[in-house]
Image (cartoon, rainbow, N blue to C red; front, side, top):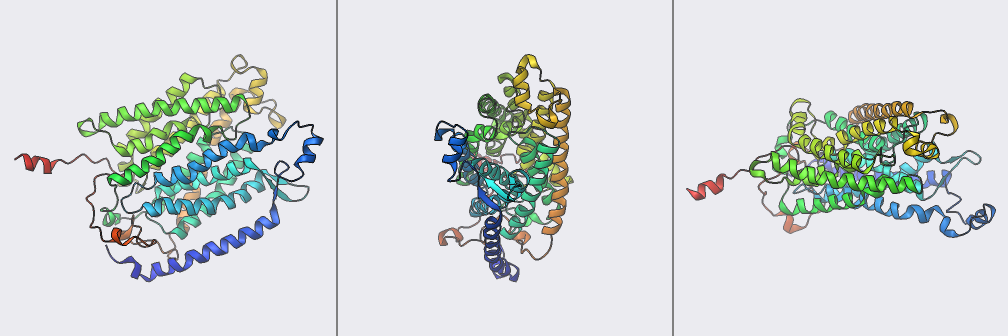
Length: 479
């Protein structure tokens, strides 16, 4: 490929990245100094608060309830998402490294944006943060990391920071509308995280469409060891997804139920994905692309209804359906979207997050509309759907309509926001890589010398297309 390091465009990127990071971090220090304070459970006055509220022990502090879930979610964000993106043969540094950058960049802005909407103390104008705010900030960042998957390898780190800045701002607004104004329930974020993040990323990818991306086709694929690294990300995500969906649910039965429902949906998805992948591949072999991604779709789709009385068999049905839809999406829909809709979806986020997210919203709407006192009990119904305050007269059938409205808001914010931000990212000031140097770490990373001298590796796997296994060499040897 051409020596991209010699291009003036990229020299500017190398100079501008430290400037952006330094300026942003100084801005964060100033804004945190003005607005952010500890909440009562993380403040030194906790001991007084304990005595005033007759709390018997420090174990009642929310830290001890939420921190295990926070650890799991944190691992998912940095290890799970990071390693899932290392499948490209020459973009592993960028996959896991830029994931690290935008997650650390974004969670600071997320604490502020979500704090202004949810945790602002109007008596002193300060945002009071505790362990639940840290979990929500990680959730907020997850939406941007999903969007990153659609444009993986095709943008500069500065473009990713711009994507994250606007993405978190949009996320905080749509989350407030869906959860507070519409009063939809979405514990696992099928709508507010996955649906929004996917359509935000896909819209940006459409706006940044590269008609000559085939110039980088030699690098747009995986090799044996890169797919193994990506499977590490898959397994971390798969194992900790029950924590993701249950992290901010109510203590007690709701949290317990959310973990069980997610656990079962994920298990069903694995078996279905394996079956569909083998069924539709030549010679009945498995495609690693499907195993890395579609096996997680059940966790996405069960998110909204995770804390509802979905029932264990209902969770298995959701996982079963999503395994089929997600895997077939990789086989048929992703190539169709690239060819006819001009959407180049590097990681196939539409199949892992977009469609399963919408399905999750629909499952949540149906489950909420079908809720009854016979199943939940009177107190359980009020507690599960938060029928208090302005919504004390809400009935399950109406709640189902509110859940459906939440899906529409998430899709509209994702597509609308993505089109606007994609237009901004098309400006020539960001220093994006040339068409013939996408999916390559060399423009942005110092690479080990032994790696730089390796000749191009024959491509065998690609997240964009469903390629048949070519065995011509074997046939020639036979002859």
